[in-house]
Image 1 (cartoon, rainbow, N blue to C red):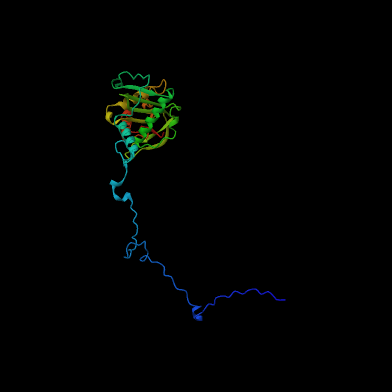
Image 2: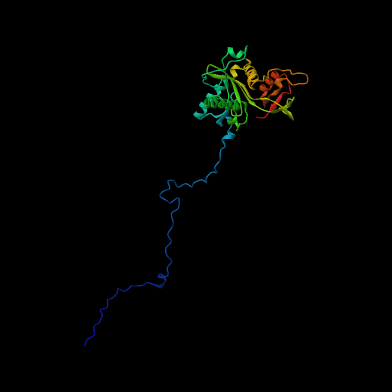
Length: 285
């Protein structure tokens, strides 16, 4: 019986030249350099990068600053922002000629022989005035706070509920002068000095607190604030006239029951003149 044999395929013989070729070190491939790279357009060496310099616009002089402080209306605004420019123009005109203020349906009658009658309308805003009129009046106080550099009053919404009153002189649709008053119970006697406002620290009875006094620039020197102060002293407290300077023997005059809230330099001059005292009462509203 013949055994079957698997056919053997004859492999081709590989010739090895030498044993050293078997252990031959592979050929090194040279990596491209910046000079040999096809993406490099120049063969010259690149200089080292220069250090970056940060510029501060504040150090380049006033011409580069965008925020401007207007010395006339005391407003800070951005000179390259159209919105800020528009706000400044409106505010600036309000300080020069008075803020716009629509005339209400009814106006108040000034005191006899008052110079207010020959200039415009006396409008007194109180807690019984329409809410829209109260809102506009509070906005007036905010504008005046900016002009006087006074801090923001966070309790301003309680001004009318706490029996505050605003006496305004309106002419040609603008408020040209204003006195804001509030009910107070005590104040402090000012110590006459040239260095700000110093007080004795002793409480004294008071009836009226003058919170703000202001007249637009174009109408200053005409006595409008003094006239409004007279209106306030005469009618702020029902049945009490605080216009008299002299009292009885050993008693204070009624003007001495009117106090002023941290007045400006011009406001201090008016307070001295109206009370005929250097040591008039002051208070913090």
